Image (cartoon, rainbow, N blue to C red; front, side, top):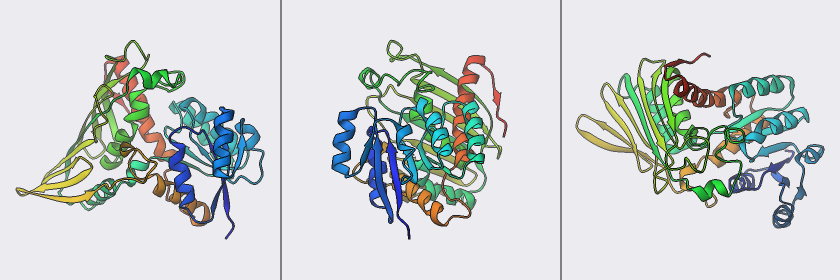
Length: 340
């Protein structure tokens, strides 16, 4: 079997998850890394025994690169995806795949004309608790779902934004809390709930108002396709990155995600269903443990998948649509209807 050769664009913290996954995937080799910091890039290339490029466009001319991993700031995702697809590469991108739904339409047209495929990293769907919960809901284990609520409280301080000038700006991050930290929670909610028909949301900035021009707090109420309701709250003003609290209330009981453990509560009994074990070494606990599985799914589909098993553009667009709708609803102070 031919070895697939990969390049990673962007050598921030998240690239380590991709590097680790590549090392654990058979018949895959790191060919190159790309970063605008030449000193850092050259040092890492020496450590990784691969090539270094300062300009990603030069790397795309390397005929030996098969797959491109995009681990850059949000505003660079769309132009890098478009350029990589035009160069005939396979592309795997960190979330969000783009900053607006208008960007999604442009990427969709480019992918349709390209020979390569585009995968997007929503690794939290692959957590053991997420997979178990999704299966139980598909099996109608506790009857009809009545509501899904999610509570996410993390910590992002002024230095976090000062150290990365692109963060906290609509022009370069596309927002803040919603599009960066909470987008995984929104993705899980819509995935578990079978899609959202309408929502009403509010965004605000309180403690970080002097630091960013985006939001640090958000809340929303959803209506799901199934008729269930959704309740969502998130903030970056906590003093730690607390685990996601997720609750699904159904006719015959509840599923509760607390401290990375999934519980089933019914008939007066509480039973543990699944536990998210400690992720591998280069992952932060709140990133989940699914990077390895997400990346390996993508490579498996490249080699064997007539029906792709990875998260592609269509699925990735669903959470971005929720983000955009919450921003829009907050401006209008009205319910917003979502369309396919």
